[in-house]
Image 1 (cartoon, helix red, strand yellow):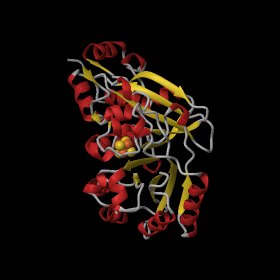
Image 2 (cartoon, rainbow, N blue to C red; image 1 turned 120 degrees about the horizontal axis):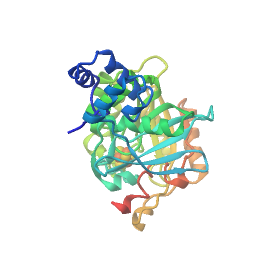
Image 3 (cartoon, rainbow, N blue to C red; image 1 turned 45 degrees about the vertical axis):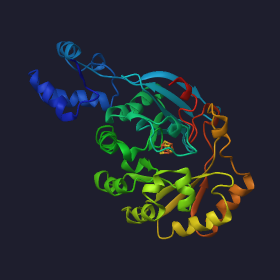
Image 4 (cartoon, protein in one colour; image 1 turned 180 degrees about the vertical axis):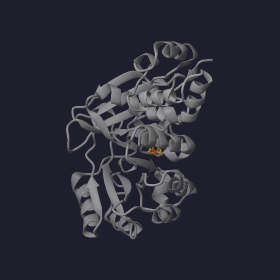
Length: 351
Ligand code: SF4
């Protein structure tokens, strides 16, 4: 069977090249072509001798994500639907940076589907299909970079489909490839979790200096367990303890995402409780007014509503007055179902 060079580790590629009798530096060249020059085939590797390229084509290949759909929002964000080798599909979302029209943040998926079942999220409705392999996670960055060149990706966020910390080993391997092989700064990569507490500790050990984001969304265990089942296993007290213990370099903060749901978690009392929960943690709060998404199930659609503008601003003001940084996130890509909680909403019927 042909070997997939996208999947192989650097050591495996070196061993393979040595086994063909080639000099070790050829392996370095190939790794450089794949991760820095974003090559998708051996034929693109023009500084390799022709006979080596022929030999590689016979024994190996470089898998590529298959672009199934690309939608561009009126606000400039873009959503990509990629097909995987086994027929599963995943989404990645490109978000324009505020500064610099040709610079983007890429939101990537770590699983096909998600098992976490957050009540406000379209991906969660789909259930988990499978974990992504490290190369499939990285390949979203490679594929989108090739599509949008010469514009480029400055930041990467693991906030697409899936709970990254439930696919820990592959996510850590992907982080290593993104930083060591592709040259992304750890400061520019954020891993977001719904609150898988034991893995928060492990992330700090295995991928130090990677930014942490926590999808918080409630200030009491009663509400959080209702909208995020993970809270039944890891309640707020344990989650906040893990955040307090998360090692942060100077000037770094944990981002807390808070999807505002009208009448569920957006009261004055919630804002005051949130201030209390975050005391002693260097933090930044992203307030995300809920995005309704188009599921076939009418009852589900009506579960939540976006709070009125005034309520959103009142909530933010309470956080500001307490000295917290709280930003109301404008929903990017809502018209193409690329906003928070909307991934796979459009495709859910097709599975
Ligand atoms: S919000 Fe994140 S963790 Fe929750 S169901 Fe959606 S993808 Fe999974």
